[in-house]
Length: 103
Image 1 (cartoon, rainbow, N blue to C red):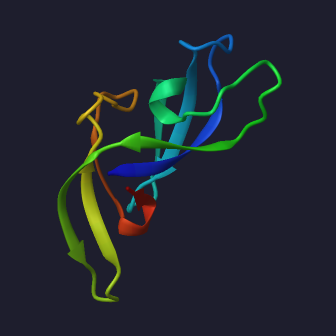
Image 2 (image 1 turned 90 degrees about the vertical axis):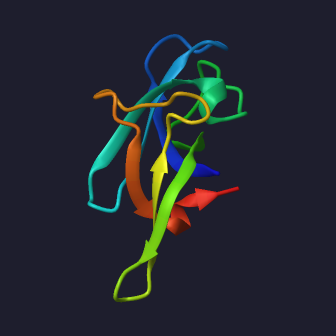
């Protein structure tokens, strides 16, 4: 599975090994920010003319799922699997709405 992210901007010169800042909002309203290499979050090619924000994804593993009293589906995910993605604070487990996932 993959969690949808918004690629906010490049954090260095744009080339294959460049890193971008990307994020998603978790169930609790926190903006979770990742710094990842471009190929980890998108198959798009970026150059100096790239416009931001753009859509991207981070691979993850579902740990558990549940529904709230309003029947909304939630999942706990771990972004350290399979590619070792963590936010700046080295956290990799998050609760999100199931609608934030794609195959």
